[in-house]
Length: 436
Image (cartoon, rainbow, N blue to C red; front, side, top):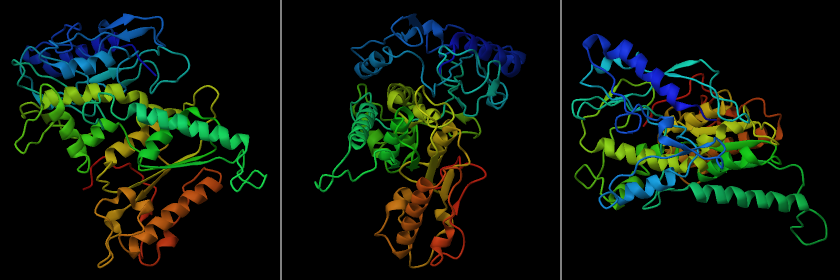
């Protein structure tokens, strides 16, 4: 899915001028050839390329590569892509400071036509969508900057494409395994086929759920899917995750120039989550970190669960039937925080197919759960209580895969005792806070 950005950005700027700043005599600056001024993103920063599916290719300007070699390496890959990120930073700059309180009700996206006919868009033509994640930087030469985006996550060391290619290759390896199963697998070498050629299902946990999002979007042979602790994007999730903080720190420290802005050494990207008040960026160096995370996230979109989730059920690719999908995750996940797990559920458009394990309701004296509930469905070692939870979660997987895939199996009866109240829920509202 892709929308044309040049009209989108003109509409964005006009709405801002009318509702947020015009009364104060402040103007929206307009130079779409400069990402630093914007509005950004814009089709002005593309070139025609008939080899690309969208007919366009990104063409962002390069900085001084002798001073910013890491930025140039990131942009060199970005400039091979056929469109902007699915989680773009929408940037608008003003001629002077503005009141941040006016921004949340004055920034909108106007949805235009698609560039391809094979995939349906997130919203119909003409829909106006408010921005729900806004950051305001008053320090840029007296001009404000709005950066609105959802999602981010994992990039390792100097790898500007992070886990992208590993995930894609692992998905291909699984597709090859499926071809072998379909050809017939004799596990005990007795001359008979032991595995069904047709009853093929998928359960993925953590990294396996990231791979599973890609695999199941393109593989027609899998009948139904359970994704446990799936999230996206990989990059921003890692930036928020206590368990992956050091990975992001190492990546920022490796870059040239180094992007460490706190003693320790450490970093503070001054990020914000969905539907929170406008974040005033008062942390020196935070914007540079955000821009770096955005480029890495952009490059990783070709292997990110968030990109492929729409194709699991509600917008299947040609030749692939919609699949029943169950999402499982735990309240307060430290490895893949809740806002990024729910982002994939929203992208898949399956809010009713979620099983949320409420760790906050499952606390029993002398029967602790793991401090990081990320592996709740596979934790057979922390305590007797964690074993009960893991067995119930895996039973839920089995019931879903063996059923019709239309509902979330009830398993709270399997946790009595030691729990005497429900701990597995289909949430009416998806969690958008970290909950830790």
